[in-house]
Amino acid sequence: MKFVILEKRSLVYTAVLTMLLVGFIAGVYITNSAVVWSNVSNRSLPIHSVDTSDNKVALSFDASWGATRTEAILEVLEINSVPATFFVTGEWMERHSERATRLVESELIELGTLSNTHPHMTRLSNRQMELELSTGSTIIKNATGKAPTLFRAPYGEFSDSLLNVASSQNLTTIQWSVDALDWQDISSYDIASRVMAQITRGSIIRMQNDGRNTVNALSAIIVAIQNKGFTITNVGDLIYTENYTIDQAGKQTRNQGNTNQ
Image (cartoon, rainbow, N blue to C red; front, top):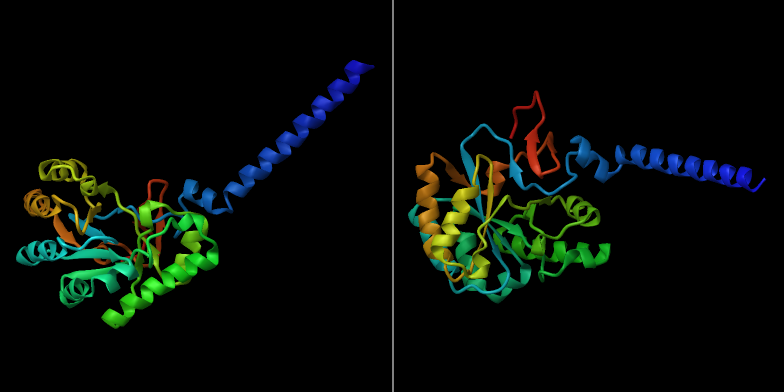
């Protein structure tokens, strides 16, 4: 009798687990996690890189703390006529207004937001996320005359909630596929070597606006990238703005049949 009861319980447990598993699998294809796996979501992940037939890569810089080397970086970009995207915090824009003005006035620079105060965004409530993004964007809009359309999450940390909040404010979330690690104060040779070992067509390169060896490394990187046959552009000119999907690795792909950037 005891054996029969145990067997019935085992069957019940098995049935319940099976139902849960089926429900989970079904949910996979209707939740954000699921569409990432099946490659059918337009904005299931931040954009880390772009699947493109053009030999081009995007150059970007994060600006949230120091600023002493920002003008030197800008001079290197201007001498070489190379565009770039600077992701800036609202606090950085206000604290370093003179250097921020130089970025705003340069025709080569695209500005994106890095939030307002550079917090760990995933630890915030949705309301706090909204305030961080809207405040940072407003400061950029006041300086440039137009609201930014690109957002980079501080520390590279993101969640479904953050992506949804960013999207609700018409911000496309951008990560990177190549991290120069210049924020670790490694040598300019190591920075350049690291970047060149990783870049491929459609890469998004992340550097810092105030790294100790960033300026020297940048000059070498620009020459090496161009010698490799790549064109350097900003993030906005690399990514697709509509009709796209993002795969598990964060690579953005234009939908078949669409020819608009």
